[in-house]
Length: 127
Image (cartoon, rainbow, N blue to C red; front, side, top):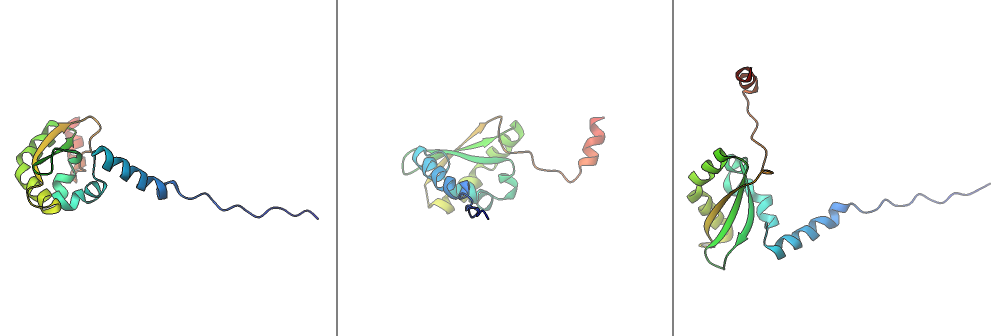
């Protein structure tokens, strides 16, 4: 009678290692603070976080500039309108006076448009 080998253990999940690697790369390039991206909806609120996402954090220790990526002109206008509130919320998260400016940048791969509860009504206008 032949004996077979026992079943091998599955390889570890990629996400187990990739999260740490991506967080290290993000910190070194100062692109997006991983904790900021994770807590973005809690910091700026659900309405604002639905239309934008954080980008590069640049500048010195005081008065840094945070890029905020949006995918439409309407979203850019809404973010610019709420700029002071966003800066205040970010300074509550980072500490007083850390964020001095917000730069809105329109990108094609921005966040998805928020879902609407009145989709059938919008469909009738398209016809």
